[in-house]
Length: 268
Image 1 (cartoon, rainbow, N blue to C red):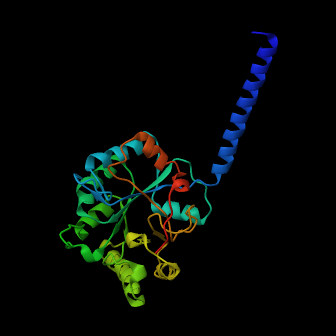
Image 2 (image 1 turned 135 degrees about the vertical axis):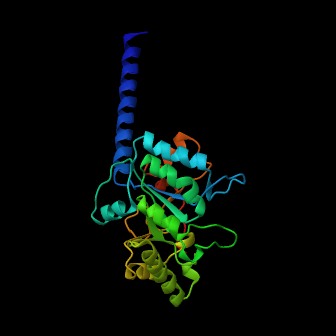
Image 3 (image 1 turned 60 degrees about the vertical axis):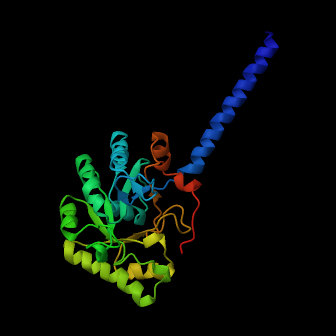
């Protein structure tokens, strides 16, 4: 190989390497202020032979929680996240929040022991009107909730009867938002500070009612137009289930940048 060819190869190598460094630096700069603490969302924790999207098997749930523990994720309470957002706090890039919607009894049977064993916090958004069961489903009763609260787990409201609020009248919205909070606080003897919109549906008027009722924040699904979760009354979450079997998939969903690649839905 002639000296001229060698020189050209070196130049090409330097140029390519330089472009790679610049590209990587550009990606880091682009992503730096777009990090959003991922909020994990679960519903049922039970055997899932039908492959339901709203269900995770006990074995898969345990695998997910072990992934968090073994990889050293900073699993925090929702209250810490919301207060951090309000005060413009920068969270470590491995921070995570764990949430459950609906308050099914299988959460108590199959998720609570895992969370206690691994010392992981979580919040359960429950429906007080369903404590005695509803349409063949079994839900957490207040004794179970009190035991969970004593173990350090948190609770929020998911309305009194799982009402889709955008289609409800103003008096019904008020009742579902306010009464569910009162019932839970009376039964659990502790403040209920957070709310989860059934099916993720909300609008500005509903958000105002949530604030007026004394809630510090509210959860949606992937609805709304605030990709970065700057508004604590429409916090987007990421669904996890039985199809999340790969450590690569888990890492991507928990990266803090997953929201950049998701399709956002209208809030109602």
